Length: 170
Image (cartoon, rainbow, N blue to C red; front, side, top):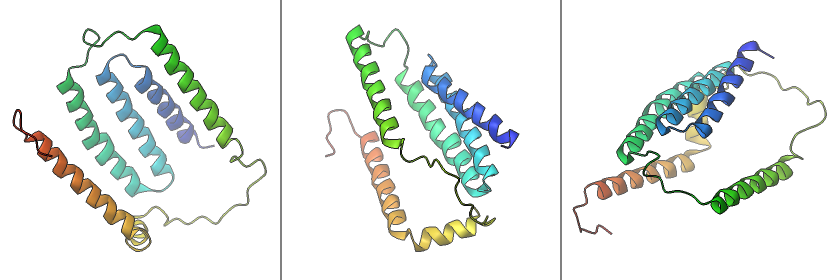
């Protein structure tokens, strides 16, 4: 295995654990940004430069700014968080453990045990022209439906943001 792959995997796993276990929400967002950067490094190793650039620009840039804005707008801290009873914590642990057990049971047969036959390497697989050709031919309808969904979400966000006190928009 390539040493850069191992390093990026190590950084991605540690920063993902930092997202989950960080006490401060701002630190959690910073760990998530580090996770996105390490995943972009994986995309670069897979020769998918466009996906790596979009991951950094869209997720590590725009989405993380939005997350930070929401976290700072909500002013989350330990003092305002309601105390959770021990029963709720235990129920959450049991639910998470059972979900992990179900996922392991469902995915255990997917991993191939034998040696897989190699496929020829196509160096153009992650390039922008190949991605655009595939996106606008085979996946045109899902692409357009996603853009309509994003347009509806933006209109809904503007309607909720412009609402006056006591006014109902829907």
